[in-house]
Image (cartoon, rainbow, N blue to C red; front, side, top):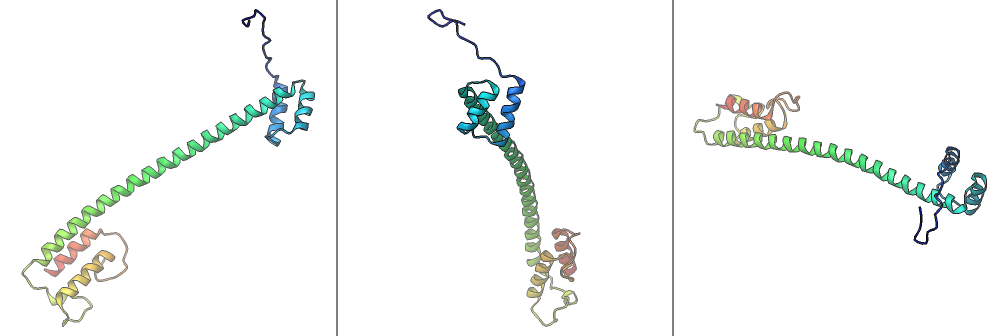
Length: 171
């Protein structure tokens, strides 16, 4: 190459594999270059001190870029996992809202019926108590447990089915 004055510029020679290996080894031990180490490496490798300093500076920049890329990939995968979990939760919320709406509709139908509640289905409550209170207590138990007559059951039956069972048993 020639500059505007017609003089040819010297091309920088590439580092040999041995020089790169030694520089890499020093970099892994200490990524900051102190003046004594720079002078020692310069003499050992036969390179100008400025070239050794620039190599370390470039290596630190490449290392930082690689680290940021790795962090970005990790964050991206975490974001994808969180978004997937969010979608799952949104689906569950929609399902529960639909189930709640169905249960409220059934409750509205149940509370507006004209037929009296059968006292034989009051469960463990005394027969002399207010029927509405007992029914709502059992409805509450229905939503909290699987079996309206046995608290703390397993979750094998949906709340909707338990609610329907309770309503049908009260008719």
